[in-house]
Image (cartoon, rainbow, N blue to C red; front, top):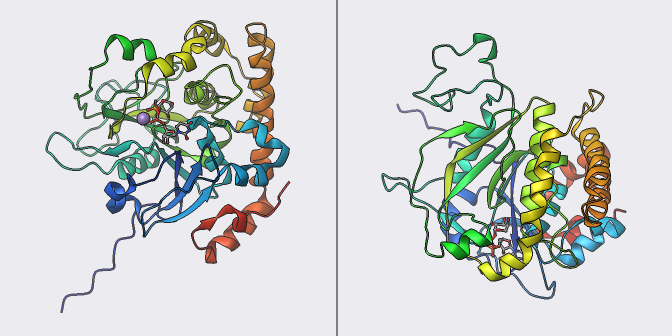
Length: 374
Ligand SMILES: O=c1ccn([C@@H]2O[C@H](COP(=O)(O)OP(=O)(O)O[C@H]3OC[C@H](O)[C@H](O)[C@H]3O)[C@@H](O)[C@H]2O)c(=O)[nH]1
Ligand SMILES: [Mn+2]
């Protein structure tokens, strides 16, 4: 007699939250339903909090609008951007899970060259659950993938790799170009599917895009601050870039890995290049100073946790980039506020309370999840 086969639970079903920043109805979820429905969503509604965001039936979610963010963080809300996708990091803050996947609401399911729909979430999970190799480049790319391995000459002492903190996915159709490139190449579309996952070598920075990104919240969460952008700030569309440069410096210091490549999503909407240019232009020339700063950052050996690294980085940002523009003084202070908010919401007591609430918490708005906590 055939034995009944227990249903296979989706990987990390109870250990991963999907964070979506949005200003629009989330009809895009319908296409992701086969892959996302088993997971809990954290929706961060930006802009007008009186607007109702429509979420398709059947998804388990909590939704935070600006009033909720103010309620949860109180005076520390100053570190969360308004009217910019950077607001997504509030979702990273309030999640109680070990893993995060964040995706933009104009990113859809892509197809691989065989025409098969890509389960981007499953690929990110695979990337996060297998080690990275930042200390020595494997020329056959991801050695932990089925059908691949370390090549001849790869030191056996390094084949254990290091824990993976970040998985950076890519985009078919609309690539994540900056405004000048968008203006010069308005019709360029990315149709090149590269079937590879690579570890970004230690000592190398990279431009982290937030639209298709996953990370291990316990390993690197406090460094995944996306700010200060949007309303009242002199810059936009650099939230994920800052976060990526700081996180990579910290990953290198703490021997954690960052991978880029698969999975692809289908990015459907090109935002307005002229609007983007207004948001980005300061970043385009500032980054010529900022990159050498991050490339030369040294973190003392006493910085043994992400929080300690982050506080030290905020000090150096203010000292070394402050002369560039007063914005960096503000950013340095906001980095400290972020860590305070992180520690406030992720203290052991908070974790225990959240675990208790998760047992019986339906999808609801945060006003029930979080009373006044500051
Ligand atoms: O004020 C806002 C504007 C947008 N959002 C949400 O953020 C996501 C990205 O928005 P959109 O797809 O319209 O902009 P893109 O130019 O394609 O975004 C890219 O560049 C900026 C960021 O780095 C972003 O991560 C990149 O994808 C989308 O979910 C909007 O609903 C918002 O929350 N507030
Ligand atoms: Mn987009």
